Structures are given as C-alpha cells and as structure tokens.
Amino acid sequence: MSKLEKNREYSVLFIGNSYTYFGDMPTKTFEKAAKAAGYDVKVTSITSGGYTLLEFADSADKHGARVDEALAGKKYDFVIMQEQSQRPASDPIKFIEGLSALHNKVKTAADKEFLYSTWGRKAESDDLTEAGWTSRYMTDRLAASYTVGGEKIGAEVCYVGLAFADIYENYPEINVYDPDCSHPSAIGSYLAGITIFAKIFGFDPRALDFDGSFDKKDTEILKTAAYKAVFEETVISAEQKEDVLKILA
Picture 1 (cartoon, rainbow, N blue to C red):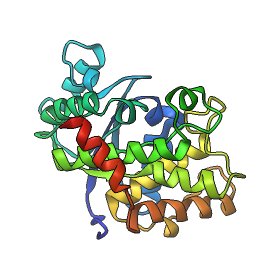
Picture 2 (cartoon, rainbow, N blue to C red; picture 1 turned 30 degrees about the vertical axis):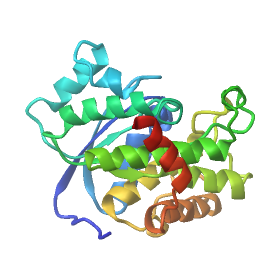
Picture 3 (cartoon, helix red, strand yellow; picture 1 turned 90 degrees about the vertical axis):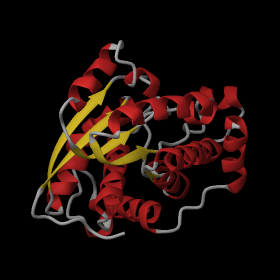
C-alpha cells in the first residue's frame, strides 16, 4: 500500500448511518486527519440513523433520493459505504443485496469504493444477549461479511471494528463506546476516522500529527490500533467467512 500524491484535491463521499455521523466523524476526524497529513480533501456525507444500504439504494426513499442527487453528474475519488450496524452479522443476504444495489448506483461515480466494517456491541448490550454472541464474535462476523461483500463488488474494507476490538480488549481504560453500548464515543469516532483515513490514503497513522481534543498518550495507542488494522495482516476467521458464504449459497 503506497501513499497517495498530495498535489491535488480528493473528493470523498460517505454513505452510512449513525456509526458514521456520531462525533461528526467524516469532517471532525477524517477530513482533519487528511489535512494534517497534507492532503486536500472535500468531504460529502449522506447519513441517517438506522438506515440500511437497501434504503440508500432506493430512489423512492428520501435519503436514497439524496444519494441519487449526490451522484448525478459527479465524480468522487472515494465512496465509503457503511451498513446498518447489525445487518452484516444478522442478515448477510440482505446486506449483500443492499450492497450490490448501492454499488450499482455508485460504481459509475466512484473511482474507488470502500466498506466501513464496524464493531460488535459492548459486552453489556442486550443485543448480544438476544443473539447469543460475544462482542468479539459479532466483530469478527461483521468483518467476515464485509470481506465477502468487498470481494463481490471489488471494494476494499476498512476494518474499523478490528481496531475497536483491539482497544476494547487490551486498553479498557480508553472508552471507545457510547453509554448505549453500541455507538462510538467521541474518542471511538476519532479511532474510526483515522483508521478509514489510513486505509484510503495509505498513510501510517502513527505518524499523524492530529490528536483531536484527546489525551496524546491515548491517541498514540489508538493510532497503533489503526495501524495494525490497516497495515498488518488482517486475520478473518475462515470459519466465520465460510458461515457467511453458506448463508449466501
């Protein structure tokens, strides 16, 4: 993975729900991180809480119509798509259906597509109890589905969920979760933004001179987690991936 050139403007479109807009991640972290690294970026976001990719792909839906408007006659260097936070794990068929439908809209307007793979709920979440999952199992299941989806449409995956799990499991003193045990906290949104930035631009986040409003010691730990999720070999459970493929077969 090589760094992108800096003598031009990059146009970026985010399509997702609250996991994308919490903490104003596209502008407050992703855009500021890019600019701190010397990149000129123009960010556009189309988001709505709880929305699925199928809804964003539906021209009859009010936010699907926003997607159509944003794509009409325009060209983006990068489009980042984020599915409803449980669907890739709980219903891979609907996830792939929505991803394929949105890809068919986006592909002519995007030079490159990326998928924003999210994370499992915090251990205390009722959603985990109902599904019979652990937080890590959900994270890995999401990553497996996003991996399969990326392979199907030719998109790369930003494994934010794996960076999230690294912090949650190894640095519990850094609270990456919102009190609802699902959404990212402010510092969790920072982690998401720098991970996506590092993946797209091929930039080592450990060299990033951008700490947001957070403690420098904490952000150094987050930058390392982002680095590992982007630049080190991402281990997706073969069993999890096979489970997704069996469901889709």
